[in-house]
Length: 373
Image (cartoon, rainbow, N blue to C red; front, side, top):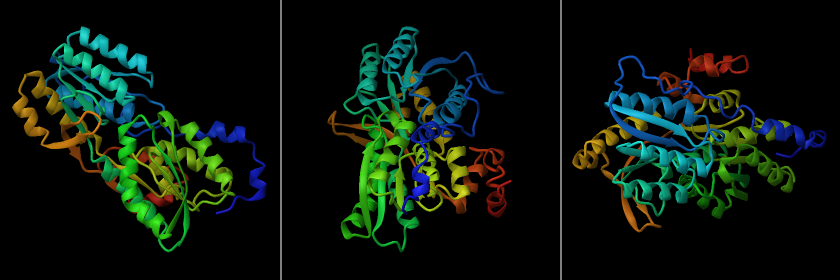
């Protein structure tokens, strides 16, 4: 696809303003931690630290309320806080939770270094640590709960290859996640199991790959625009590592009249991502049933709070390699699912996003065709 000359005249400032817009709404609750009906309060205290809110809607929209509900149902009293992308705040929150006497600490870290430092402090106090969603390389956490993140990346690669079928030599730009996030590395590794052979054979042409610090959507959009214009305005497919980055990419593509003409991947099945898929601006996302992740974490935390490592080990039956720490980490790895326009309904049927959040004026016809009500 080539940029139209008239579109080039649009000011960069407008694109930068729009790039970060609309990427962070979510289906799911408002993220409050009030006990739900029938839940248990006054249980064993467990600390949970989530990483941020800027790059993805999932942390406050899905993980926070789902963890809260699952932990209370397991007889725990969760203290769930968000570090808002600030490493110092992450550390300070952990210090406070350790001092308050939590029996288990669950951390979704901003970086492996920061997470490992927190885990070491908790371990020194005899507090077991669960790495949630992101493994801290070189750390000491006892357990890890996440999705099969190499599989997530492979699904992104599969989706892009599917979208570009028959376009020999189609040009691809890769907008990846943060270099400090091990998950971003795993996503990339999974993508390459599908895409590298296609690059090597000439079926696809890789224009550029760029990691985006802190998963920053605005930086992702700016970076993509620079790569796009540097390639003469030509691109056929974009690997965007999550729906937030995909939204930033779509904003730039829209600026140049290319939205709907370029295949864009995503991840997290956010309301905005699903809307973009229904509009035809994004080709696919990856649905990760976060309730399963929350339930497994609650089950592990409940066992560890009682000192029942046998029950914890029977839950975490898989192992993940930590090459930096030269160790195998007991893990729970859940199965992700590829979602395109044809099966968006699986997300609404599962209750992760409401039909009302994705079926708006621009997508109503697509919702009707997909049977989403």
